[in-house]
Amino acid sequence: MAIEEGKYPGELASPQQIHELAEEYRKAAHHLLPLGRPGKPLTRAPFRLSAIHAIELYLTALLLYRGHNPNQIRKMHHDLSARTEHTLAAGLRLRTKTAKHLQSLSQNREYLVTRYGPEMAATTSHITRLTATLDEVAVKVSVLIGVSPRSQQVGPAAAREVQGRDSAASLSAATANPTT
Image 1 (cartoon, helix red, strand yellow):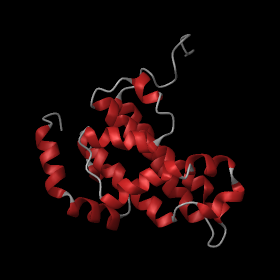
Image 2: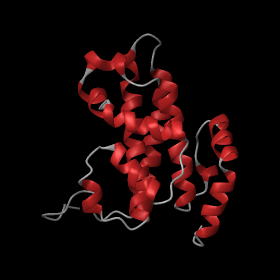
Image 3: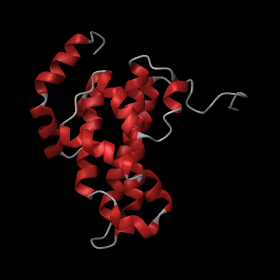
C-alpha cells in the first residue's frame, strides 16, 4: 500500500493501532533488556530506544483516544515533556517521579543521545527508572483507553505495584468510560 501524497505515516491510524504498536515496542524493549551488560552503557541503547519509543507511542495513543488532532501531536516531535503535559490534561495520572522522569527524558534529549550519541551513553537515566516509567505508562494508558492491563506482559511486581497503588484511580477511569 503506497502512502498517499501529503499524508504522514500514522496520520490515519486509530488510537488502538498506535497502542498495539506501542505494545510491540514495549515487548521488544523487555526482550532487549537482558542483553545489556553491567558497566557497558552502549549495550543498553537498543533497550532504551525501544522503551522511549514505546512510551511516546502510548502517550500518542491516549492523545488520539481523547480526540487530539494527529497533526498537532506530530508537531510535538519526540518531546515527551509536551506529550506528558497534554496526556495529564487528558486524564492520565502518573506518579510524580514518573512525570518528572518523562520531563527529564526530554530535557536531557535521551531519545537523541540514545540514537546518535554513544559518547554520552553514560549520562542517560538509570535503567530501572526507565523500565519503571515504561511499565507505568503502559499499564495506565491501557486502562484509560480500554485495554485490559492483564494482557500486558510487564513484570508481575511492576504490574502489582502500579495497579495496587492506583487501583481506585484506574477503576474510576474505567467506570467513567463505558466502552471499557
